Length: 534
Image (cartoon, rainbow, N blue to C red; front, side):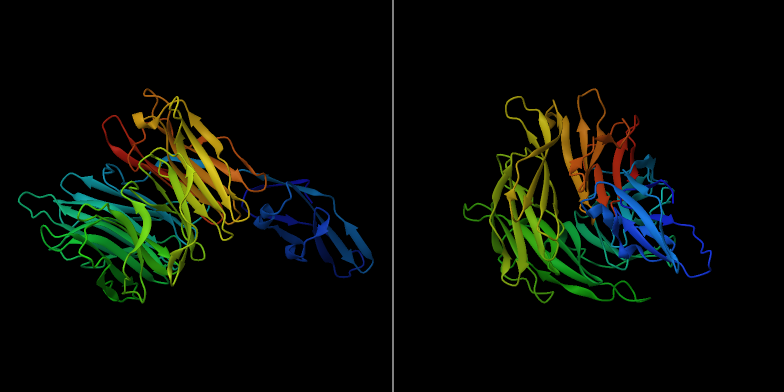
């Protein structure tokens, strides 16, 4: 047995013992971890050091094997298992063919992790004479040298069309739905916006590129549309929602179209559901957000007030895939410009919103037949203008990350708040700070977070310490066993990172993370780049 075995955090290791029996009798093996038999390691000469030991309270591990034949047993020497942290690799790698990115509109740089652990990145681009198009990248293997296997593009209808508001979601079997908004910018063109969508089917093998197929008409070309969004509802079922105005001067309604991924070689249009109005009160819906809750689409809408009444946030949970009950009040008014939430787990999630005084409020919710209920809005932090990062696990633990501003000297700090059902909310843990205030375009901003199946965290954020220093992307990691954070490291090189919608982060079940961001060079060319934590 070796005296030491180095295993990268979250990965398995292999131990092998060489033994022979002088009397020719059969050999058997018992593997021991920290002196205790570990039956799951097996009874052969080779044992796998599993990732699951990282979930235990052992800060370190020693392994031995007992080898037995008909005459007796011999215990091997100890092997000390050393687990080392992951490192950011290929940082600053630009995606081939993805120069001249356009990042001026919401949703221009998106990423997600599919159930197989593949990370996908999409962004919009434009070339002279070619109009706008979307590039889609993904990798399917989890090795240091893993190439980006997919390199496909979805083009706009024509060169006078501008693409914006990308949204993407995937199924358990690897299909991806992309939705986006197209605005005709050509001379003399009607001022219309159209929602379009496409289906991506994976290739025949893990390393083979798949193919895109346009789904066809999603919104009527005669309608003014806006804010498309897509979520995965179930196995092969997607919900696509957007706002639309049926005629000039009419209020905007929120509508949903259900999409069932067709099997095999069926056309992408197969299974396209009919549109269903979410708001039937002839009120003007000006903001729309869609999520999955308990296997059903949940719509959050800001409905403008009438007759001098204040506007209100409302929600509706679809039933029978096509019926939207009368929207219920969410307890938020026009002071709360946007909602944030963690991906739901077992039909539960946490919502967050900041009011006009920049105080962050959170609410734990469960999606039930009766509606969205569990607790009320509670004050969490003074997070000035910072979009929070939210995580929730199957045990009801909530992690909230946000940037707060000191009201005296206006420096910015990155804080971490946790909620556990047994204790409630914790006080803030300070993770990073800056002597500058991002209200002036400086300081800390845009926290992004992800958790693996072992409870370890990856946190990233943008940092611009002064006007003369380029903005950078920084990251740190939390070890559940050590119950501590690593020191921050710079992921993106010290170049000018584009400020608007400029970074995404995704962490898969094994703790492997991919960060993507956009940079602007001296010629004002925007390039999408990435780094991977492996």
